[in-house]
Amino acid sequence: MQPMASTARRPAARPARTYDSSRRTRQAAQTRAEVLAAAVTLFNEQGWAATKLADIAARAGVAVETIYSGFGSKKGLLRAAMDVAVVGDAAAVPFSEREEFLQLGRGPLDARLRAGAAVTAEIHERSSGVWHAIVVAAAGDTEVENWRVQLERGRRAQVGESLALIAGHPIDARLADACWALYSAEVYTQLTRDAGWNRAEYEQWLCETTAQLLGFEPVEPG
Image 1: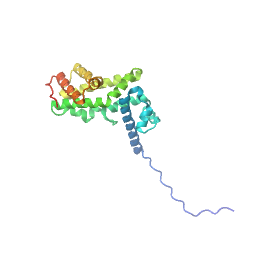
Image 2: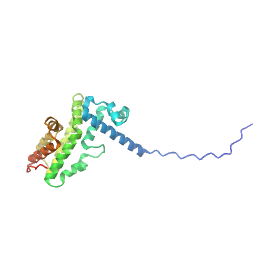
Image 3: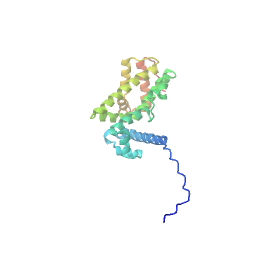
Image 4: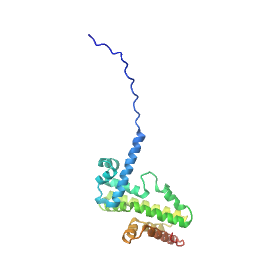
């Protein structure tokens, strides 16, 4: 005897769910930004050797495997952290297209000099510890040393472009080199940590020194 066929209607098949790739992309970008923010903080505070990926992962609230997946290694994360520390966020916008850079060419000379001093101080506040971590790591790693050289070449070119905006005309290469050396993280650290200068003193020194090098009148304290 064969079983009786059911006459009940089967529920209609549900349409396949559309995969929300945009949401996943946003979540991945947020996770990356949180990892980078944690890395910037810890490399600044603890340096290269003392900063562990497990510490960064814990601070960012992710697994260590997530860091390896996104950055490949500790030094890969260090390289990306330096980029973020310089510009202040993980957005893929070059410094030369950001408002902080563009305002160097606006307003009277005093305003342009002060804008340049302010952005230099801000960058060093965010990145000087990360830069020191790169210098330490570079001593024992050729790849990191190559990154260090590339970063300095990029900073050298950026200094020249910034000075040209402030002055309103192209800058002599030797003069740009002198400013590139003066604006370094090493000088910033010596003056603010070892000599005990505060940020206002550092910025005023940058304004006065840059004005003198460019052949302008001294900038009065703000």
